[in-house]
Image (cartoon, rainbow, N blue to C red; front, top):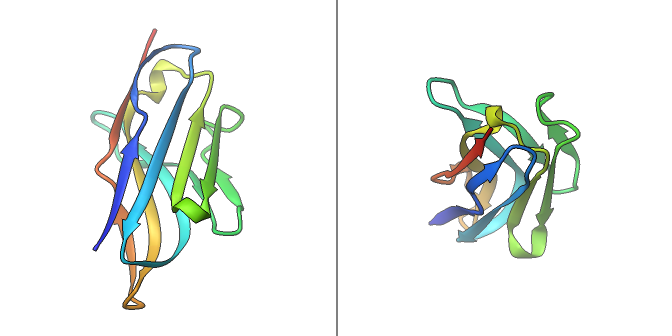
Length: 120
């Protein structure tokens, strides 16, 4: 079994910052790409940022220059530093990871999500 557990969401005023964390645990052999997605009410889930095991990153245009994704491979943890937050960043943020488990099977795992609310 593999689990992804997010933390760090909350309520913040526009212009503020939050840092999300997502820790992967369980029967993990290796983790390839990790990322963050978000889903606002009434909208589809969308990509926020991804990072490969080698550290290559990719960002949605809407967050470039404001959000930074990073990871600690030793801790199987991915982070999302969110600065200059806007009300339109309000959403449930989900962690995602491409994991090979100890049985050498590949799966795409999702966390349960953490709420981020930005007030104007």
